[in-house]
Amino acid sequence: MSAFFAPLHRPQQGMRTPGPDAEVLEGPASVPQARLAGLREQAICYALSRHVPDMAHGFVVSVNHAEWQVSGELACRIASLVREALMDELARTE
Image (cartoon, rainbow, N blue to C red; front, side, top):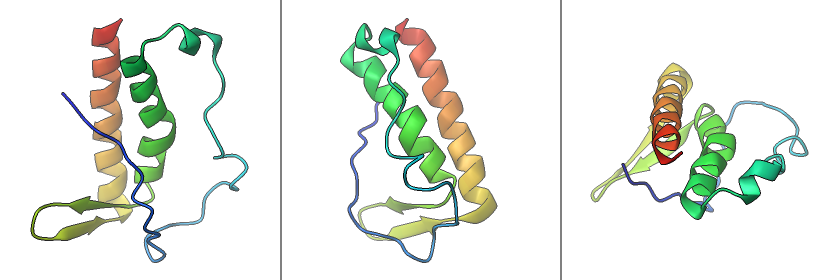
């Protein structure tokens, strides 16, 4: 499995649902063991702590010819599957 996570810098105003305050989501917690992890493991952990929870609120899938907005229950289900896949990937790197 390979994935590249990059911010889109395009606010999707209509998709977001109210959630925790911005202060709560400002950054992942600092974990001493994370300093010992490799870059790949850090990227996976960052995706698990930031990207996957954000996906549950909605996201956009970009393909060559169009964009697909995913929201609601489907976004939650896909985020759960992505979390499971990343956890499996993280377990393989240890």
